[in-house]
Amino acid sequence: MSKGFTFFEMLVVITIIGLLLMIALPNYTEARRKATRNTCISNQKIIYTAATIYMMEESESLVGMGHKERLDALIDNGYIRGSKWAECPSSGDKDYDDYTIVFMSDIVSDVECDVEPSGHIWP
Image (cartoon, rainbow, N blue to C red; front, side, top):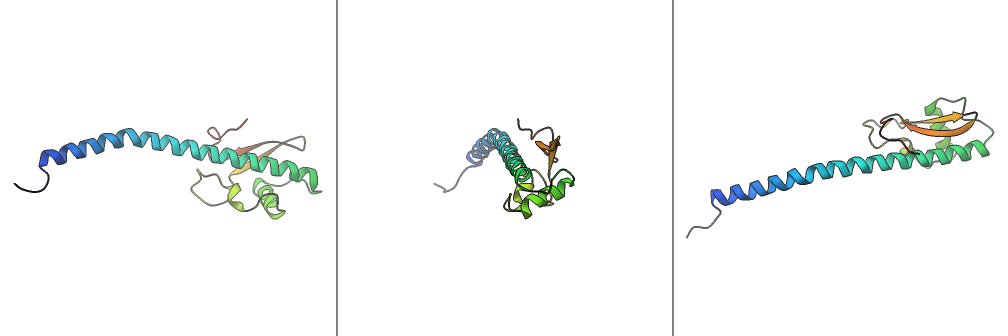
C-alpha cells in the first residue's frame, strides 16, 4: 500500500478550499470597507468636536484659514493629539489633510471627508 494522496483526493481538497475562498472573500472585503468607513466617520466626529471647542476657547478663528491650516491649528494647539486623526484610512497618501471643516456663520457645521465624499457621510 502506497503512502500519500491520490490525484482525486487532492482535486477534492483544492475544490473545497476554492469554494470556501469564494464565500469568504466578499464578506472579508465588505467588512474591511465598513471598518474603514466607520473609522473615517469617527475621525470626522473627533475633528468636529475639536474644532467646536477651539472656536469657543481661542481668539484666533479657524474660518479664515485653509483646510490644511485648520487641521494644523487643531493639532498644534492640542485639540487633536497627533496627525493620524487628519488622515482618512481610505487615503493612499499620508498628507494628513483629508478632511474639510465646514462653517456656517462662524459656527462649525460639518466635517467632510475629501477622499470618499459620498461614502463617508455622518449625520
